[in-house]
Structures are given as C-alpha cells and as structure tokens.
Length: 216
Image (cartoon, rainbow, N blue to C red; front, side, top):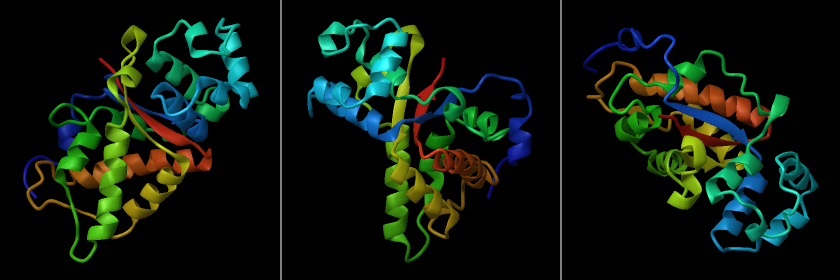
C-alpha cells in the first residue's frame, strides 16, 4: 500500500456536507415505477395496486394520479418522492458512516467510484467478485438521465433491491475481494466497505433497497 492513511486523508473534511448519500427505498415500488417510466409497463398498473402510493401523492397535492400525464412532475421527481421511504421507516441507523461514506477524500469525492476502481478479485473467487462488482455498478449508476436528474438539483445515480442489498452485504463480508496492491489510500477500500456495509445492514434490517444520490 502507498500514500496517506485514511485518518490523515479525512483531516479537514469534518463538518462538511456529504457529497453523496444513500437513502432507503421501497424496493418493489421503486422497481415498478422505473418500469412504468421506461415503457415496460403502464403507470395504471403501478398506481392501481398501491394505496399507500396514492395517499402519498395526495399529500403532495396530486389528486388526479390515475395516469402519468395527470402528474405535473418530471420523471425523476416522481420516482424519488414515490419510492423513498419516509418517516421512521426511512431512517438509516449508520452513525458516522454517513459522513465517512458521503465525502470520500480522494478523486471526485465518491467512495463507490474509489472502490470500483481499486477493488480486485482474489485468486479463485472470480464468480463471487463479479457479483460484487455488478452490484456496486448498479448502485453507482443504474438510472437513465430522465430518471436521474430532477428539479431542485435532484441527482439520483443508482439503486439496488432488497435482495441485492442482502447479497452484496454477504459477499462483502466474505473473502471475495481484495484491495489493489497499489491503491493510493492505505486502507481505502476497507474503509469504504466498512461504511457501505453499515448502510447495507441498516437497509436489510428495514427490508429496504438502497438509492445513491449525489449533491452539489
């Protein structure tokens, strides 16, 4: 390993707002809305079977929600407001991991970008590593632009389902990955995995998926 230690790298970042955050989402609803907004099913199929979604939209002033055309929001805003868990069930119990994951002291500030760049497969673990890598990519960048960028600076990047949360947590805690020998931050990959795993455990406890958002 070369370069600074993690503690040295975080000096000066205390108290700064996270560059990226992870939110809990209603996994099946989020996926169904993505399908509706990408033409894989009709909006009516989503709304007809989800009374809680109807109520949520009504509390936001949307009385007529039977068709997509009757909702005056952009696609990303509709997806975010409809799919994000709110209230007590939307709270992530991750402590300082929110800040440590949210503003990473390398490159563009993205912990996931760092992990994806510097994580490697151990010998004989290619299949397990590929599963980890695919899930990280899905969480980092899964949404097309019209579902990613919304009003008021909304920028959603990617998401993973309840089952993908469970699978990724299990795979990250096993011996299915290793940091590159020349990673620039000593302990960087392990630090990202530690704080990402805290989010994964909290999401699994809440039976939720995870959504990654960027902030300007």
